[in-house]
Length: 389
Image (cartoon, rainbow, N blue to C red):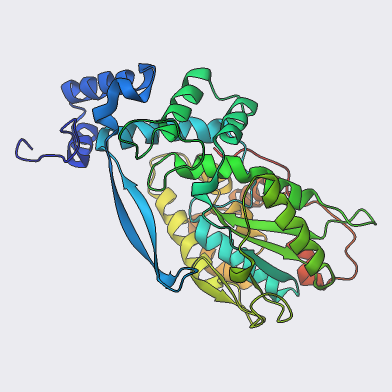
């Protein structure tokens, strides 16, 4: 323990944090608490400049940039104590900032859920359009971040700290930057999701001349796919580009993709979160089934009453958005192979179904021109608005 050193100014590293957590070492915990208070009470970043020193590493994107050269993503490596504090602050922000339910960045197994939902939409006859934003994180306006924090009711002291942090990132002389949030910081994900949330909200609020919803968005941080009907593709493209422009973000149309071959890449293939989707995309039933089983068995090991376990199952974000999308075969497979589910009585199973139904209400609309599967997917993307916690 004493031989372990950290590259950060505080001398603390991840090993120290894990040790304090496992042993409840009061001395270490008190030191961390004092450090957090000093961070929080600093009037400006300058007051604790050594703590905010960081280095930047460049991660290969495995693709070429606009000049045909290898593209890299800059990621900030922070002091361990600062990263730990930002994790605490992130939890507070998640409980405050309202995020669209189809933004899966802060949802457990969110990447898998987003891809599953996209596959279901394509299988149902809907069209997927992926939008690429130029330098998304680097283009975020600070005044819009500050406005979002105020509107969402984030405390003044937290807002002040966040604005100081993003304005002084990667800066030796701490001059005031006006745009950009740094990738690699624990706060970046929730800040970007909160900043761009109105793009997803306005996308899903759009109605056609008959008052019917005709599009919805699936997002994972700055990766966003808009799902729409074949007759609304060009309209959806124009409207989405306009929404990004309102937020001072620029869409790179050369890198946009669409599952309809007459638009953008012409191949009819969309790459979303590392996976290709086309006309023959299949739902990720096996992955979802395995994920459900793992979650079921994990809760089954908890030393709590069966009733509480059922509530945990139903409240789990991993299950709720997907349970109505899964085929009966996949769902029954997940339940049948779970050691705990096999022990449920009939009444307990009815309780499970009741809570699942209550937590996933559907908004019904008259989309008679869609196939039944496409209609189900489109409707299931508009449950009652909730705040992810």
